[in-house]
Amino acid sequence: MLENSSFRQGIRDSALIILAVAFFGTAYGVLAMSAGFSPWLAIFSSVVIVSGAAQFAMIGLLAAGPVPVLLAATGLGLRHLPMSASLAGIIGPRPLGTRLRLSFILVDETFGLTVRAANAGVEDVVAYKTAADLMLYTGFVGGTAIGATFGAAIDPEAVGIGVLFPLLFLGLAAPMIHGRRDWLVAGSAVLTSIAATLLLPSAWQVTVAAVAASAVGMAFGE
Image (tube, rainbow, N blue to C red):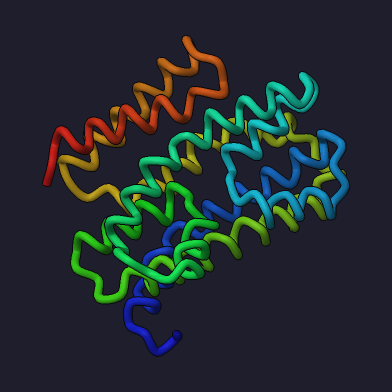
């Protein structure tokens, strides 16, 4: 696999966002510890869930009980329906094992990189996404392990973890913004996110922003 040029390209492209992803994982580990998680449970949740948005929502809603957590996870997960449909069209017919592997890590960052690479004519989309997924997965789980290991000694409010999120999102988005259409999509996501935060329940905020950004992206084609 390492000899595959598309795999190596996926490694190079995702290296631009790996630090931001690792910081997200570290922040999640710290917050999970402050919410009463044991270190192993915090790390295990990142290993099996692989969804920063859902995991942060889970931490924020734990005190309200299981129903709000499930509703939030469902609302956040709805954005994976158009993402998976788009990815299926890009990769074409593949063995079930390949499709399951690619669907396990279906996150905004590697999805965006994969779509951009496919539009640019990458030779092997599956190898490209596999590399990007490995980079993101390693960064997020590794970051969670760091946060869980040292999180008990860190006060999230004191270090201002909440203030870091907008900066980290900019770090994730910056490598993927290169043209007018990208700026329109990113801007619509920012504006819709602000409106959703003010007007909608937390379970639907990310989904509404993602749908709005997708609509803008389709309206302003390449």
